[in-house]
Image 1 (cartoon, rainbow, N blue to C red):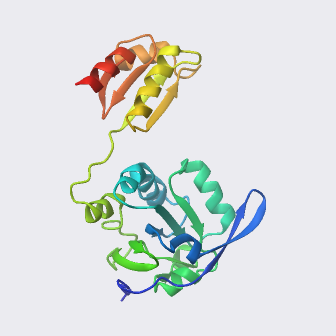
Image 2: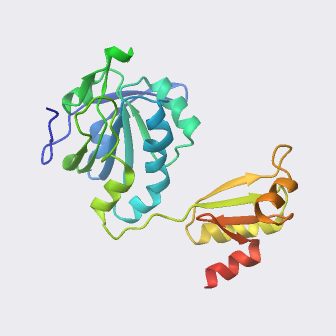
Length: 243
């Protein structure tokens, strides 16, 4: 049975990380001492659930976590630093610190190192999340010990609801833009002033004004969607914020 280590200190480990083409040692003290940190651990970088839901969920909700007292969000996987660095780039996970537990020392110390040789993975981490305060584990969410790769309780929303049941995720914002568009710049500034992160889709050879008109009815930029609802251009966005 996988151990729940609430109330215990995290293992003391030094992680070997490649940064700016140099080897850097990062200790658990550097990551956790004097901080409130959310940690989630998963079987492997680039694997389906980890890439489509687990990491993106924490990355997207990072601003909400930080507004609720969390200093850092850390993802730990039994992968080498080169794999984790490339995964971070691929996922554009700028809000999460990806830590390579290449030798599995931290994961083994947590009692979460499991045998996945049947999949050709060797030793990997079981999927779990935890809230760590100044190096002490305050809460753990461990996936049920069933066959396969369950993903039921270690997700970002479950952790956020534990920290603050009233916390609400930020709206999902998409803005269609065009290079050199002053109204686009105005709209993006408004979104940033209101603390809203956004996905920007610039018009290109693949995404044209015809595409824009098909999805929004408008042929000029910007066009903003919030939580799937068409807001419109920069003036409509200003009116949205005023109401």
